[in-house]
Image 1 (tube, rainbow, N blue to C red):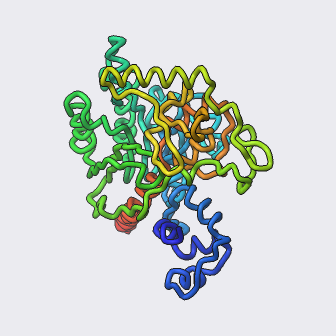
Image 2: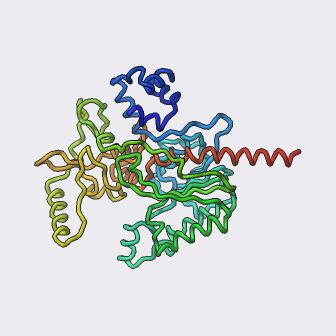
Image 3: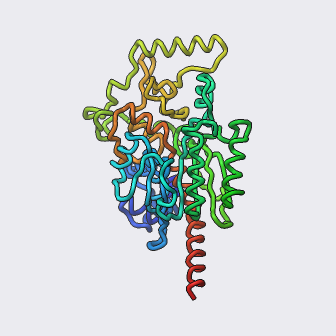
Length: 407
């Protein structure tokens, strides 16, 4: 556990979090003394939080804007790298509530970005945008096909929101950007959608662009593949090879409520002295019978549809925004002869890499939607870490250029 923590944090940062000296951490690493077992809960809690990058030096921090912000998952990763958010856009009222509860409202937060003038967006170093993925996701495309509705760029309410990102980049010319979407974006419309996005970013806007599909299970116990598109205004030495992944995959044991009294109860998710998961998260006999029958019906027909039953030793399926309906994609086994249960919203937060300090001020239904639509925070933190030196280098280039002009 110490080794995994050191892959994410510097000796000094880890020492500060554990209330020891950096020299003590160094001795543990060299094997000169053993890391006390009493610190295991603290290490476990640290690893539940976002991957924090080496902070930027004071005075060298960068600014960013947070578009299609959701509940701030991308923001958490870039704040950890030393960034400061100067503008936010999120249209959903419930997501705004969660966002403001956790980040405050010290800058302008607008709802719909479509009518907002690009010229009025504050200057910023980095543009962040998890632009809506429903038009490009497998589930989104299937649903819209069934309803006879357009998808991708033909979807005027969501697909074209990418072009609002493009108009802001064109107007404000940030030093860098990060865009996040579903893996299926690459293959949507036989690859034409992605080619158009790349054409706009590279050819029209003139940015150096890099993309990679990253599976969140490299950081959290959830299979969640998402495409990350990173761009820089000037040529850089950016490389995905600089990514650092934890050496071992985490299992659901790291995010499930232990129910043994080792964590404090958090109403309404856990109750009592042992912090047991509230009974409302246990599936009713009727729902459990329905899900089993539904799975058997499709199994007999040769289909792969069904529920996902997991234990603490497993990695889960992808958490979706529809989890509030029946929780079928991730059901936690409670042992033979017992009905399984849903994850609590706090466990969903942990599954996405949010720290336990993250506040959940909305109903369970809204919380499930929000975390299902969010990003894996440690992935964002790690990408921010490898972007940071190139952002700072472009800042320095800009300063040098301005200084030269002034002379």
